[in-house]
Length: 156
Length: 369
Image (cartoon, rainbow over all chains, first blue to last red; front, top):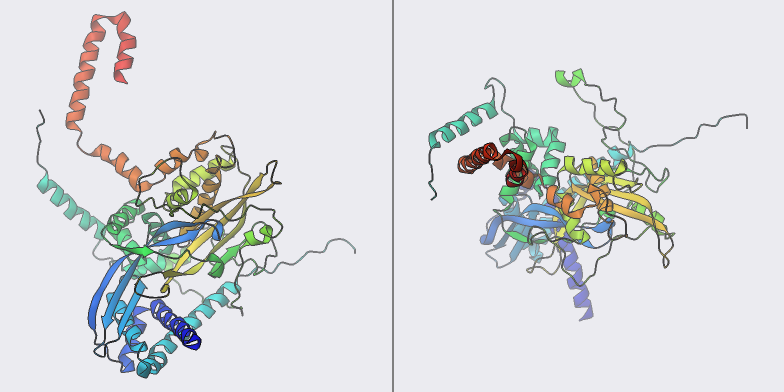
């Protein structure tokens, strides 16, 4: 029983990580990968895709009480596969196709038989691309790091 | 009796058609694409997102084109669009300590953990116009240097270790977070409502007020503890999922202003703080916001409210450029009937003035007010 709960938590973490990779993906990259993946993109729309707002919150001083900073556009979709799995997606922006594909990917991911395909053909390339972009960004920023040196004046 | 006068439909239609033509300009020049604006006028896009209070680069770029580059008009368009969308909820508060940092500087500590990262800054440029840019020359790729993906702690945490600085602002936990887009403004405000108003406030207005505090109108002795710019993850709690959904990342600018001391009989003196958090790369705005945030805490610290920047009702009522432009620009709409009434009044006053010159002067002044 306890092991089952832990397994469930672990699966939730993995599903969340999958959704994070999909949300961060450039829309054209996701559709290109999808086209090459051979994964089915047919699903019954349950809700959306529809665009709305979320209010972004920050914290006073960085770590204090929350406050509202402003809104962002988000598009969400819920789909049901012919095999019954229901998938959800919430992604920043107004790209309905990206939200639809992300919801289908979430539904396919929940099927243990197809999870491996989703991971290998969609999520791994997306994560690799994101990690690469982040590394480049960090290295470009690091090149602008100030190396201070001290000018020694006088004899000793 | 009220008599409505109609007319001008054809004139308005043709004026808008002319506007569309002038917006497009010379047809021999290629039309701007939105991705060009997003990529190459990105700080203008950021400003429209921040003051339009809507994070969506393509929409901000569209608004900039539609407004012919009039950013306040663009902000107005974005605000109007916002009202057409349903709201899905409030994100979890962003964690700026976990930011993918693109710039991070401190004016208070030279050797802070993680270092001074200048990033893509205008600082230290000579502010000379660059003819090569006009010629459209090739641009070098950025230099790179190995970096580790360490979490970069905020500068405020360094001072906090010794208790030398007030903690991050806390508010009672049993109350809802204020939302000025849902409830009408009420004074006095809590700091969360004020920060929301400041975050969408006009950069020029906040800049001028921040500057006024430096010049002595509500002095706060500020230092830039830290400015950081970069991307933060957004997460949203939704009923259909047992975990917070990751939505993607947004770029924000955070400014931690460190200000001079406050203490009391009970507490020893410590630095006070002002905070700024703005969409996009918006360093000037984040700094101005944090100066105003600190100045507006005068009441909380028992300081005398003597300057405009400390006057919450004055600042918050006038910082919104959509409201300001609405009320200022409405003056150019037809006021024919109002003005006719004033004309009648001034004629009557002048007639009375002619009849009784000695007493009339004082009365006239009163009536005009």
